[in-house]
Every structure is written in structure tokens, then in C-alpha cells.
Image 1: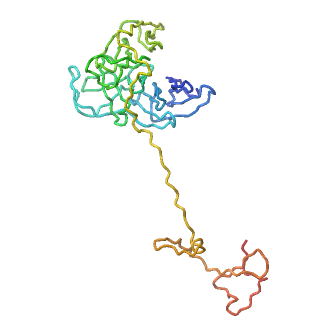
Image 2: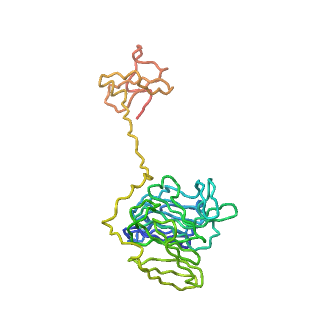
Image 3: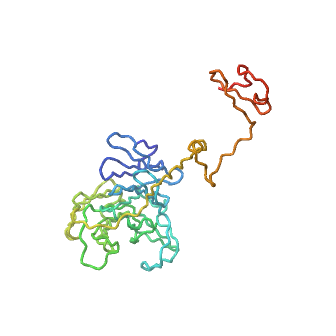
Length: 356
């Protein structure tokens, strides 16, 4: 992987040709899996980001998202490796969350480095319209509001999350179901998507299930391991989930996905709002053609009144005389010397100065 320290997380490109990796050496690389060479060092976060431990690749192939323990989430151009957005602080409106009142002010969005987890598993939805970020921690007085933040693709230029889903404990991993479901016949749809996205949020000892239509969890699994949970993965058909633990064992969950809705085929998906223009292309200004005064004189045209002439250097005036012989030298005379036109005889074979 050509990293200087331990690799903390991986993410495949949508076409499976490239692999993004983040490391404890505070860097993000994109590798060509066919040749093994680094295609692009997307971003170097040395002395800027501490311990990046989460990475996700946009299903549309446009962005890469990373999360680090310095309470930041970065949106990166997958083609050029430039940082487009950095999410860390945000002004949130006043709202009541349970027994706690969230005041209207600027909050830090993510948990600090005291969160004990091997990764901060951010994820894109399969449709690419949502970025689901774990490790949300809003500090309100002496209380900490843990949960998950939802960012909508069409609102990325606003640098503000769409929703905050509270959780009793800090979440550190998001895994999306590969299937998309139809909307239920309810008025609630806080994301505004024409379909439902399912995902799970992992805490230290619990698995919470959410969808993009309801604000509250739609499922909960807990007390399945003796030690802390570490990772989770969906099967390609969305019917099975495997969950690993720090004790070295894995738990398999079998789901009845049909009870959560009807699956939508890719050809039946409705169009979603377009992406904002976050990647700016620089346009080069055309160079102005400078017309030399000599060309204007040869063409018989006089320069305009606004034409600017290049000032001459304050050097000694020189008079160029053409020799009668076919010599390649130029015979120059300075201002203080006598010119042959003033009556003095000057021999072309005895020039004053030679210039190649």
C-alpha cells in the first residue's frame, strides 16, 4: 500500500479498478489494483488531520469521504484529490431532543479522540444521494447527545447536515443495505427521496436499523456478543448481516427484508436532484497578442492614441552604419565619436567596435 504506518480503512471504487486507503500516517492514497501503483495521492493530511480512520467512495464515482479523530469529515474530489469541503462545526437551530433543549448556536458535530473505536465508518447510500456519518456528538452543557448525521447530496454546498438521529450511545460505523425499497404509504419522508434507503448503525454493544423515511429506528439488536462490536457487513441480497466482535467471534443475522417493503429495481428508480457544482474548473484567460511597432510601420498603419510605447533604456545613443564590404560585422559608433557624414573620413576596414 506504500503507507508509512498501519492502514486503518479501505474503500473500493464503483468500477472495482481502484482502491482507496487511509492510514495512521495521516494520508489517503488511491491505488490501481491492476498494476499496484499509486494512481493519485488524493490528499496529504500531514499536520492537518489526525488519525484518519474512515473512508467511503461515492457510488457515482465523483467524491471520496474521509473521517478522522480530529472531529472532521472531508469531502474530496476523487479525480484530482483536492479537498472540496470540510465538515466539523455548524450552526444548528433550536430544537428539543428528549429532555434536552438544543440552543441555536454553533456546535462541533463529531466526537473527539476519546471515542474508543477502530474506525469511523462513514458511508454513502447505494443511490449516492445521502452521506451517513457516525460519531455525532453534540455537547449541550454537561450532556452529550450521541447519534448519526445525515447529509444530502444536493445540500453539500451548504456545509450543514440534513438531520440528526439521536442514539443512547455513540455510533461508530454505518453500513447500508445494497437494496432500495419503495416508500411506505405515510406522509413522513424527511429526506425527500423517492425511495427508501436502509442502513445499520453500530454502537459498542448494539445494532440500530434506520431508513430514510422515518426519524426513529425501525429495528434494534443488542446483547449478541460478550465484548465490544467492531464491524458489520451486509450480504449482496440484503438478507444476511455478519457482525464481528473484539472477542474474535462473529454473529450472523438473517433478515426478512420483504417486511420492510418492496425492492426497487435500478431501471425503476426515479431521478433525484442533481449534484451541486462543488468542483470548479479554472478557465484560462486568452493571451493578448502584442503587435510590434515595426510591423505597424511596415503595414503603413499608425498606432492608436491609446497605444502604449515601450520606454527606451537610458543608454548611449548608437549610430549604425552599413559597411561597403560583404562583412558580417556591424560597425557601431557611439554618440561622442565623429560620424563620416560630418566630413571626416572613416575607413570601413577600421571599425570602432565589433558586435556579432
